[in-house]
Length: 419
Image (cartoon, rainbow, N blue to C red; front, side):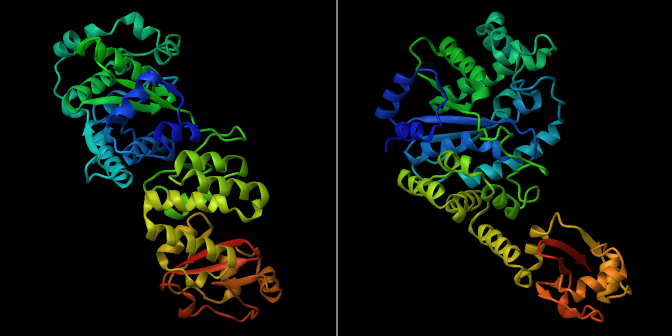
């Protein structure tokens, strides 16, 4: 399947500046094209993924991706989608964020080979630019009326927008022009909220490089959920790509819990599975939804892409252990991931290890009487093994990695004892 045909089938193309010209150019030559991200945090979250995964699809079809991390624009703040001014970050914080995001982008793109990806940082040209150069060489080319007509600016005129954020679109336009000039970059990809910034970049190229300059812009649709709730958010907050913020197990669980109404769309958007495979999974959703084959395929593809095969297998082991209750096979790292949010109790040296006493101390049972009833009724398991003896005391063999004991009350209520 040709690239643009595939993108349209997947529903990835939202807006194009010159659909006919772009298709003609892509059919005739291999181009360089870019997508950027501002380092507003030290990690991207899954809301950043779709434009970059789309850029990766271009690389798979022989085009050269340019990945831009906005070390300069991150210091200013994009007003797109914001109702008020961003809190400015320090140069040191932004640089730390840049380094974190670069590592994540290196996981997605191939930086070796004939059409190797190129990593750029707009601080390299914007950081040393003086005010006069900014105003004379670039500001002169973008009219105030043109900027006021942009949705990102117009939507903020009533509540207020600083000159700093008002100027943001010119900075991003400079990025496009610099990449066009230095790396023969002919196209920019971004989320639907970036349409105004992308078209400003094309205007800058037209003014600086002449009417004959060929460059294009394409935006990606906003990812939505069928139930109307926001994609990429859970009760715990955003789903980050950094494993220290969102563990691979949590990342895997997010995708595997995708609703039937959304899973086929997400397979098209986020995975590199081919049309035939996705069609088969779509049939499975319709005819045997209880098997959740599509959700498993989505979770596996995404976890493997972002965290690697080893982390994926670990996430699967944790998932299977929690489902079966056979948690003693898990190691310390897997327990820390899988039981991150369950109630925990830290046992102090010298404290009683008698199970009845422990159940009360850890607030697993409300009283000693209740604890004895829970044990005798078979409601208490230690590391997956049911215990019926009210005289039982924990021994060293019950401490996984000499650090954790997992107690389950009933079928699903887990508690973590830490030593």
